[in-house]
Length: 432
Image (cartoon, rainbow, N blue to C red; front, side, top):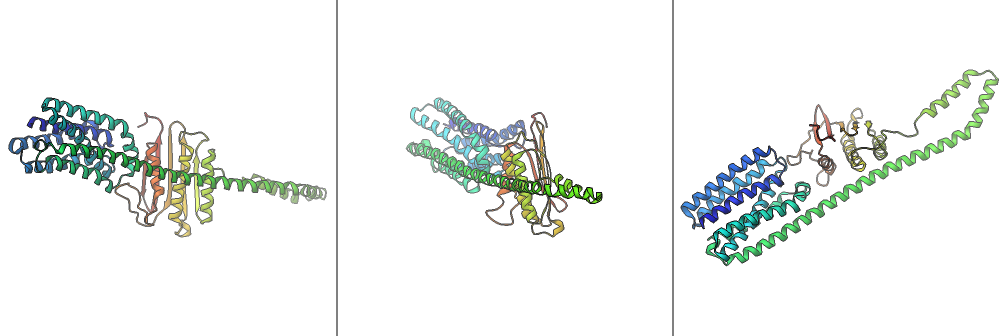
């Protein structure tokens, strides 16, 4: 029995390491992470050996050793994770539940057939099967959805499940002394599986609602841009009609001036017509129709707010980035900048936007606006905390999602009283 308990701990350490390496965005190299996990596993295994040697059937040594093992193993997830420590905490507790599932199955086999060898084999096989299923079916969901949507209260679910399993199996006596509790443990295990399924469905639905919200904002901004272009085109057509109506009268006036030798007046009239014809009928920022529509709409909003918007944009008609994704991120950044400078002095109400897409190589976006207030950045997201309270700040979250989707280098900071947002995407894999 002592050998079986040690085997459970060894398997738990190994498979928790696999979950950490698979489900967490790692801060260090894989070799470094494996070495760190091996060190934490050695501590846990050494504690288990000591417990087996001096107090195997006593409840309090188990409580004491677990009080050290659990923080050591869970700290591993927090230390190894590159970002979002709340998500790392959730994965840490969840991985404990996953390996407990395999351990409960093996304990059931031990009580049923009284074969330690068979139970040890089932322990490893069950944990391997559970890991394979988790890796196949929920890895993508965890990395793309849970890592973004997770919150502290969501970590309570796996933590309480793990605590319940532990108390049921080891306190006040071990499961082999109370074989009747295994039916309840298996029932609880099935319940936990259902809880995780419902939890993932909830997260997926929540993420879908957010995606729908941003898509509606995107389409609204695009429609505003199209409306602006349509109004501009309609006005240009009206101007052409007026010019054609006036042309006959102007031509007759020019003929009269020329006959009377008034060449200077005739020349001035011709220069005025040329200057009028040379004026563009609408602003054109780039060749990309969708992005240009958004920029036209945002430029109109900025002008109405008394804000100078300077745009330098070289985005081709066909590009590597989805046009709607780029349109919504641009709209959000400009809207945020407009809100930031709206209340400033007239000389400070200006925004600079630079955007360049070297098709097939890289994309660069930078937006700057004056910022005379202290900006507080969230330790969780790295984004500026909205001063307008709850319900605001979603624009920058959308920008961060855009950066994650395209694996972009994204940064926002304040430098010399200027708020700066930069996004850099490399399209070629070989570019460092």
